[in-house]
Image (cartoon, rainbow, N blue to C red; front, side, top):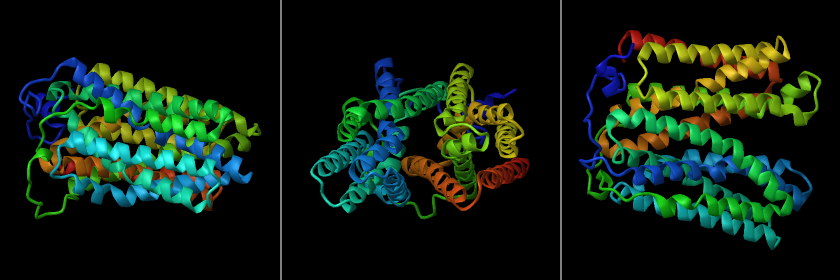
Length: 398
């Protein structure tokens, strides 16, 4: 059972205040606006694999260019997360978030416009990279704003609801992209870009440290404790991506048509939504030993998928991975909240999103280099190693 200290400190032993950073809990409408902003912020990223593939298919007759555009967007996110986050250190958090969202929206609109006018394909890479470069920083500032919108005791529930909405976004956005893409791939990108601009209109403006001049920290933000949880985020991202990206290959391995890849992705997404609902109801920070068990559960699910004993067993493995996504993601956010200096929270949260992207890149590379059983085995082994590292660090009270 989680004790009072764990609930208030995210397991770090350092108590947090009961009120929000603004000194009083804002109204529910402000929190609702934040939740809507959180869900819609991810729409372009969730829909882009399908939208970009349909766009390149219409332009070149080959959908593989969509994967290249996604790679450009993801690499730009990894490279831009920390520098762009630091650029906004002395600006109000909500205002800088609005600027980032507007930049991404304009980049996607220009990308669609140029595609419609038949400009050289290289320009699509430029604007895809520009749109992706702000994703990590935007997430970091969005997450840092939440601290001023809810009390510490209600933070786990808010993050749980956000995680649930995030999973719903990643389920529905590709469907929307596919449907709109049948009308026009260019129209699909325009529509999804505008939907992703909602945070610029709804995000609540709050008082925060980013509105004040702050001195640069003399030490690196990557302390061993922070690096530990970023490593977990990367391993989790690789595990999920191995199922999502390898779903078509898994369907072929079992003798089914590629379209039946949804046999693995849909259970993964549904179980992740269920996990988000449960952690929202629980509304507590998980104890460290529980986190270790959840990591082991994810590793076991990855191993079960890698063994491919049967179709049912592989689907069960995907479900095992999905159902712990939201609880683990919520814990990472809470524990990093206590470990990061107040003026560096946005940067740390941007790194958390970036670590997930790094995991996706690693999973893509492994799946490209090896067969699907070997690739899944490598990812499962990585997940087991991370679990053991966290268990050892927890024993030493890192």
